[in-house]
Length: 116
Image 1: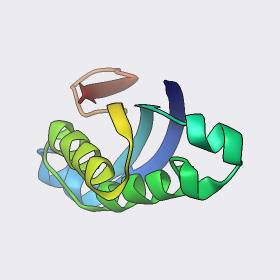
Image 2: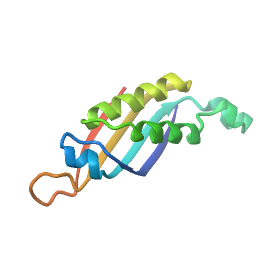
Image 3: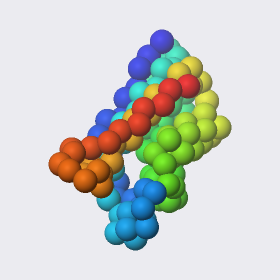
Image 4: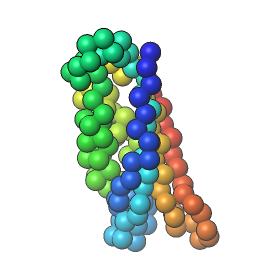
């Protein structure tokens, strides 16, 4: 088994339960870890035999553009899309962190992590 990680992808999006969050937006950090079998690609050196990082990034980008109230919903959509649109994913973990969430005090980020 192999682990592929895309870490600290930055997006500006409009996720949140408050009207202000959906109007002004916020910065989000997305990291993901995929467990897969890349034994064929390590021999062939062919991207067609591997999980293509660019395709994964494009899926994450597309799903981050779709506004949601909850980060849980965004995580689920990202996982569902990656599992539907790519092959050989044995396990996936997605973490989304909202920078400076409106909590009424100083908070670095609020994060949701989901695994399938």
